[in-house]
Length: 374
Length: 259
Image (cartoon, rainbow over all chains, first blue to last red; front, side):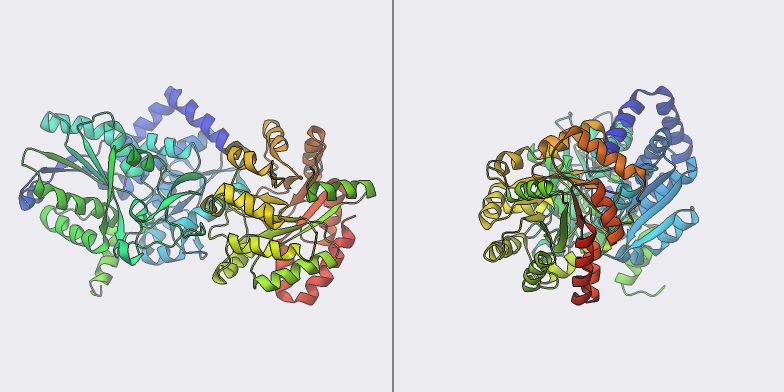
C-alpha cells in the first residue's frame, strides 16, 4: 500500500510538473516518433465495399507497438521517484521490449518476467529484450503465461519495493495503475481525433480496438467517450471459440472477481480459481480485463465482442495483402471486427481501427500454424 | 465474546509464553493427511494452527507454498472442502484454527455465506493477504458479530497511519510480515525487526505474531523474544516433504525455541 500511495503522489505531481510534461512530449516526438499517422486504408475499404476504414498506426511507434507510450511515461516517473530499477511483466513481449527500451533510455536497471509458454512463442522478443540490456526471467508456474508473469512481478515488487518501480503494462491492477496507464496512452486518441478532423472534417462513426488488459483501447477510446455519436467496439480474444472454453473473452465467458489488485471481469471456476486462457495472440491471452472496461460496458458506452483465432489470422493475412501492413496478431483481432461491420455500413461512414502493433514478432508463429517451415 | 484465538493469547500471556503458530496447506498431499498433520501440530505443542486454502494465483506466497497450492488444487481441494475439514477437526480438537486464503475464492463463495459457514464449522479466524482493511468493510461488518477474527497484515514498509488502521481493523492478533517479500523468503535478524515490532506494540495491546521467512529454531527463538507469536509455514512444508518423521522432530525443536 505505501508503494501505491507513493506512486499515486508522484503521478499526480507529474501531471502538474511542467518540466516532466515537457520532457515526455519531447520524447514522444523525437524518440517514439509521434504523432503516429492516421492512414486511410483505401484498398481494404474498396475490398469490403462499405465504410471508409482508417488505421491509427501505433505499429509505427518506436519498438513497434503502443506499449512504448506507457513505458516511457513510467520510466520518467520511476526516475522522478528516485528508483534505481524497473521491473515488468510481459505476454507477447511488446511491453517487455518497451520497458527494456525505456530503461535503457533513462539508464535504469531492468528485469522482465515472462511465462515459459510465452517465451517459447515470442523467442524473438526475448532476444530483443536481452539485447536492450534487460534480464529476462522465466516464470514456469501456473499457466506459464501473462497472469503468472504479473504474479511474479508483483512478488518481486513486494520484495524490492524500496528500490524498484513496477511498470505495469496495461490499464490494470491496483489504483493508480489503470488511471495512470490510460493517461500515458491517451495520446493515441487525442492525436486520432485531430487527424480524423483534418482528414474528413468530422468525428468517426466507429472506433475499434482489441482488448487484452485493455490499454490500447482505453488510450484510443478515452478522448472520444463524451462524443456520444461515436460508437466503440472492444474486441477480445475468442480463441478456439467460446463454447470450447479455450478463449480469453472475459465478457463473453467471465464474471466479477477480485484479482491482482482490482475488481473486474475474470475467467474463473465455481471456486474462484482463475482459469487458464487461450489465444493465438499472447498479448490477449489473459484471464482478466482492466477495471474501467466493465464500467464502460455496464454504462452501455462500449460494446465488447470477440474474434476467434481463425478470424484474427484471416484478418492478419488480408491486411498484409491489401495494404502491405502486417499487423500484430493482437491488432488483427480489431481488424477482424472491422471486416465484419464495414460491409454493412454505407460508404460515407468512418471506421477508425487502432492498429496497436506490428506483426513482425508473429511471423514465425503464423508460419508454424500454416505448417510452413522457415 | 472473546474468540478462541484471543483466549489463547491471554492464557499464554499470563504464563509468560509465546504462541507457536504452524501453517499447513490444506489438501497437500490430501485432506486426510492434513487432518493428521493438524493433530500432529497440536501434539507437538502448537497453540494456534493456520490452514492454507489453495488458490490458483497465490500472490503473497513463495515457491514452496505455491507448489503446495498447486498440488492441493490438483487434488480438487476448494474453500468449501477446507471449511468442511475444519468442521471435522472440531470434533476432535479445540485448538484455534485460522484460514489463510485469498479474496477471490471468498468473494465467489459469497462473503455472507463464507462467514456463516466458517464460523459454524468452528473456524476462529481468517487471513486474506490481498484484502487491505480499506476494502474490508463488508467482511468486517459480518465477521465481527460472528466472532470470526479477521487478521490483517503489516509490513516493514507500513507507515504509522497504516499501522493504526491495521491495528484498529484486526481481531485476534496483528500479523507482522517480517520481510518485504513473499512467504519463505530469507529473514534478516537485525535491529529493524525489533524496532518495527516495538513500534506496533507502542500503538496497541493486541498480540503481534510474526511470519514470512521464519525457518530455523534459532530465528524462531529470536522472534519469540520480540513478538507474542511466531508463524512458520514454508519451512514446515519443506521438512514434511522430506519426511514426516523429520517434520515431527523439527516441530518439537521449534516449540522448544518459542518460549
